[in-house]
Image 1: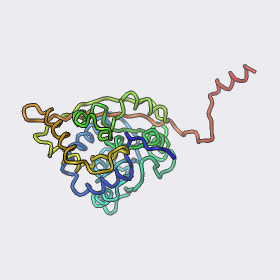
Image 2: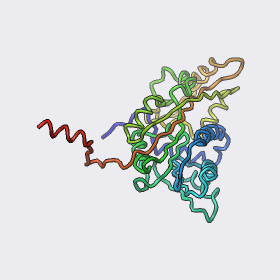
Image 3: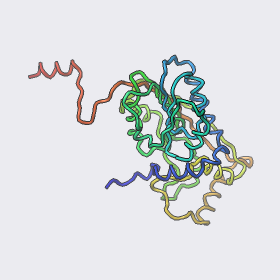
Image 4: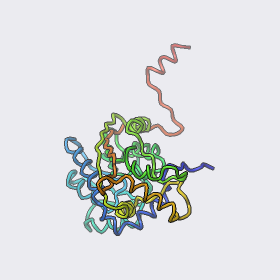
Length: 290
């Protein structure tokens, strides 16, 4: 039996957290809105012929509305693990819309190979337990020369919170993927010509309660496989708050978010598990060597 990586989120817990926060996550919409705007800005110069768009981690549907304007006449498919988030998404759409919502795990997209022209994922990657599997499935459903665009969090994100938990053996803050490693993984899983860039966002808090409230309403409470299974005791939580307080400057805590934006292109049909592909030159070389 495989042992879960302590640095990866449990998908069941991720679903539960977003189900619970579906009714009040607008309180921290600024983070998703910021990354959403960054994604849309990077899409502007791209000339694309688009009929079908897949939104991974579609949530309540804010990105659906923006992409509907950007790709007029296209059919949008919004996929999310959270049933409650998709309920909001459905209500936000038109009764006669061709758009569809799918409750599914993004690591096992229930769509045909090569069926999507564009796949978008806004701040979804940090919630994924098996990133290579997700990217492999994106490459599978994306048509040749189709676009995959995404935003994610880089390794410098939440460093202040990570510092506060230093010394605790249980996992509390995930180690986010490095931009260069992410680019390598995109190529390895069947996508091509990745382009990535970074922005830094700093959020200021006057007290730790506001920080933990935002982590809660975004669904971003601890879902790591290696987290402690008991409640965090008052004494331990007090030490964390003290550690955060020690990082205050002029009565404010500055929380760092490293925003990673990227895109890559569909490379065409992927070989099946029991298939192998060789170049013509490779085959010729093998024949000459006999």
